[in-house]
Image (cartoon, rainbow, N blue to C red; front, side, top):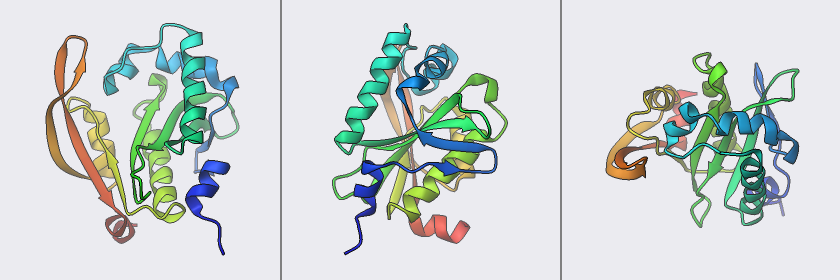
Amino acid sequence: MAADPIDAAFALLPSITTERLHLRPIQAGDAEALFVIKSDLEVTRRYGQEPHGSLDETRAWIGRLETSAARRDALFWCLTLGGCDRAIGSCTLWNFDPSFHCAELGYELHRAYWGGGLMTEAASAVVAYGFTELALHRIEACPLADNSASRRLLLKLGFTCEGNLRQRAFFRGHFDDQLYFGLLKDEWTKAA
């Protein structure tokens, strides 16, 4: 009997290589590079979280990622530029439904690399992995409504905006709307 692809992914998350990027499992040694990203309010406000205040906070976050993988809650990749192993961002499939037919896409990128299409390249590879290797039926994403870059990325990847979750996220003293995007495997297959 063939191994379950979900079991295989959680046992040993494979690396993914794209034209310009290498996506690999996040490691403890990535803490300093990821702290630069996670301590930047311009990055973290895009998804409604406070920036990390210390390197120890980022180390603890990496530790929680290991726990998430052990609980089969999330698969996290670290983004590096080809030929360089320094983390410039992350991409994840998480919030798996109990049947493992649906997951949520998440991502963040060092501000110095915004606007160059790198996140489109990384997220596209992770979406392809989700549909082809994990046999997902649906992938979702829930960016804050004022995150226009994230909306553009998701539309470029073929996602459909399915709704507006009014005042769902509370950040820095006010409620923000959150958008609800979805992409079905057959839609992705037709567009590929």
